[in-house]
Length: 104
Image (tube, rainbow, N blue to C red; front, side):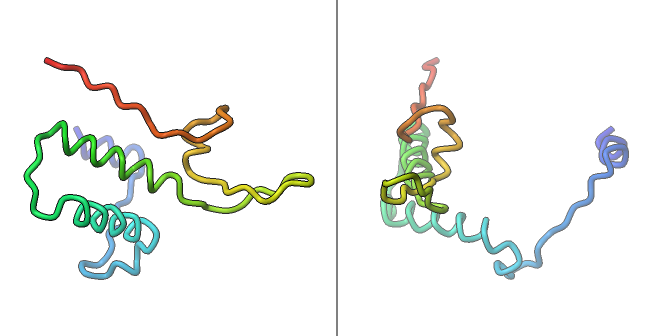
């Protein structure tokens, strides 16, 4: 079933060579940023699932506020354009994401 779907959709897997992060430079850099942040925040702490979700959401928000480029408008200083602008399309100010967990 999966093989038929892959053949029908003409999906081709392109894997990077093991231990060759320069092949996937951009996303490997993002993975490194998350790992470094987790290491600095947590150290050797043991967290519950909810605590880990909270920490990862905060790291996500910080990484999504990094500037990609700058927008120049009339008579204003350049404003940074961040991934959060695309995630919160239509809002004037980028904000931290709100995560609502359902309790069982």
